[in-house]
Image (cartoon, rainbow, N blue to C red):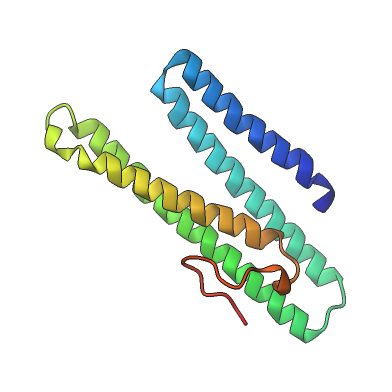
Length: 153
């Protein structure tokens, strides 16, 4: 997987820039909404691929028990981040749908839009962390701390 990191990162960057450019030109909110969703789906697929390749690599290599335990901890952190990101984006999208459908008849629900932004930001943070953990093969590559995660020693 490592040999594909740069092209994959370039494709993700182009996806983000393309979505933003099309949204700016067309000013169609649906473009932004579906573009954001496609970026989240891309991230989920990349996480799954990274996780699969790391598991495959770990099972074919003869690694000592200490490294195996550390790799399992990395995998658990990635899964934790992935699950949290998925939960927050589902909650955020649900809140957004409620706000979008109720706003014309109940304008006082406008604060739900703020909740959508908070949930989507937290979802993206956890998703980025999950992808980061999935790409690590050595627990010593981790920073000393990371917001909202308990890192293994």
